[in-house]
Amino acid sequence: MSADPHFLFIVSSTREAGHTGNTEWLARQAAAALPAGTRQTWLHLSQFTLPAFVDQRHTTGQYAAPEGGMKALLDATMAATDIVFVSPVYWYSIPAPLKTYIDHWSAWMRVPGLPFKEEMGKKSLRLVTTSGDRDKAQPMIDSVRLCAQFLAMRWGGALWGKGGAPKAVEADAAAVTAAATFLIAA
Ligand SMILES: Cc1cc2nc3c(=O)[nH]c(=O)nc-3n(C[C@H](O)[C@H](O)[C@H](O)COP(=O)(O)O)c2cc1C
Image (cartoon, rainbow, N blue to C red; front, side, top):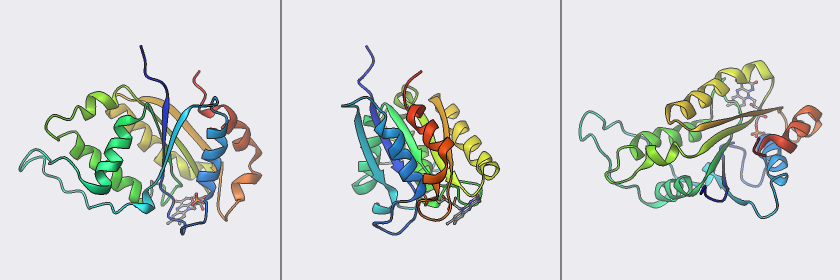
């Protein structure tokens, strides 16, 4: 029997505290359409201290179990059935905090006794993103899709909206319409 859905939204905009970005606004439209009672966890990477990732694959070959904020991120990741990256396009790519978080996936795959890769293969990954124009988002969408593929995660696709200044995406009617069904399982 499959687990009850538990959506983890990982917000990686670097807008200043208290200023909700376009991407989070769009993701919250999508989340509002989930069936009542669907479990949701929202994490803002800007509220975590993310240690630099160190590649130990060819030295110690393994990693200690994370502590502090990274443990909280790992626990939230493991607990989710559906992970949603809520990520603006920065330089055709993902913002640095999200990149650091997923670099740590490489460590979590090598924590003795932690079935990270196996468990990730049971989850879905989706992306909600905004940028100045749709074409500029494609390399980042492809990158996230390939990350899902690497971990055998189900790829739930990308929801894109036209962002820019705060609240800009609220005028993107196509994105708002698409948000209403984006998270609903086919
Ligand atoms: C550092 C930085 C890099 C950006 N790079 C791009 C880009 O490569 N292409 C693009 O179309 N927009 C780019 N943008 C614009 C953002 O994608 C856009 O303003 C987005 O809506 C911001 O999301 P937010 O409101 O959720 O923070 C960039 C913005 C910043 C701050």
